[in-house]
Image (tube, rainbow, N blue to C red; front, side, top):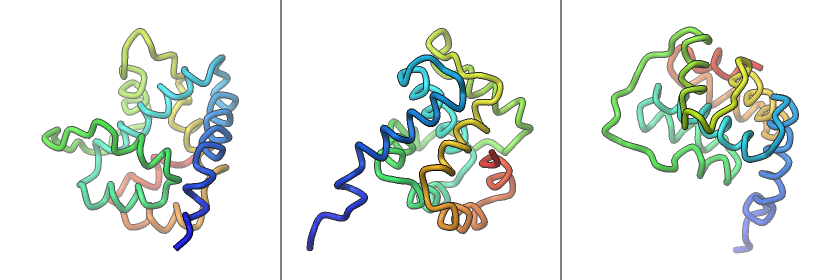
Length: 139
């Protein structure tokens, strides 16, 4: 079996995604964009049972999939989806002083994600997740 193409081009695909996230959010660096992306992914992950999180992860490209599951505290309680403002504040609280995520962070990451994945695959996965998941990933 040959190495799947998604793994062969994972770094280039991630670079394209992180540049899109940086530009959409009007951030200055890809380091800032990475913190924002990680915070958005973890904020979303906190709201999913493990089986649902893995379903979502399978819709992501390899590097984003790895970021999504990295440092997962399986003992952390699941929290409900809440309003966009509350979840945005959660994103912005991630890493405190090292986070410059804008008020549009969730929508910005959603827009970058949708530019860089098969939207039909993403939407099928989101449709199988709990109420609130689809709205979370609206750009």
